[in-house]
Length: 229
Image (cartoon, rainbow, N blue to C red; front, side, top):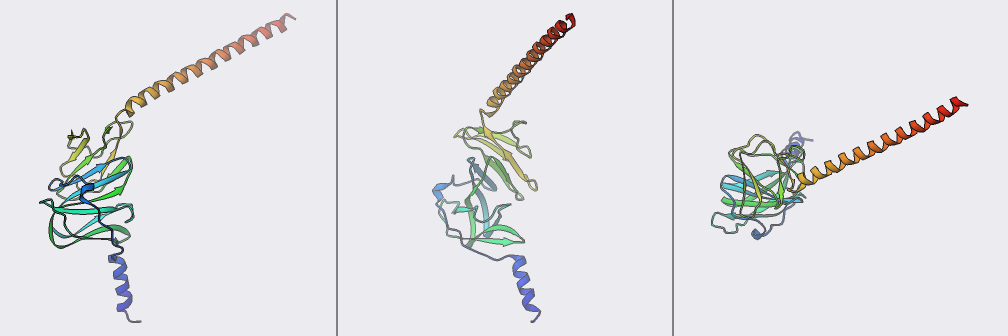
């Protein structure tokens, strides 16, 4: 076999190959437009909606961290005028990692958005020269040393018009952003739970103390009776 054939195969597996196409979503599913030079993550405890700012690009790639292309759905793209833009989205494995690739017919400037599954422990890598906003679900918060804190520490924390907490990092690259969040009443519930646990420990300890004391008295009485005999 000629040498060029195995080299060609190796280059294909190393560089990655484009696989199945991902169906597009609807712009109305997202809070568009976004913010220039920013990536916004809208969390809702079971999924995350991503809105990313794009400038003069014909191809964009997003690494899916430790997930696969099946954890990616409903991609959309709109320009700065709010018009829906035609694009093609495919999954692309590169060096053992899963990427999603957006392809446009010409240079695109605007916002792309997509949805991924997620949980209460949110973590994402960051890009250079881009600010990041994480919008927590309504009724949720973060920052408790016992229940979870965001890392690195946000540059600003604010509240939007819908009452949601918004964590802002101006340029967090190269750090990975991690946010553990929970319902706002969770610290209070944890406080009462701790009080109940302490009371339970006190009651059980008191019960055992009184039981042992009673047994010792009975034992002492029996021993005294035996001595008199």
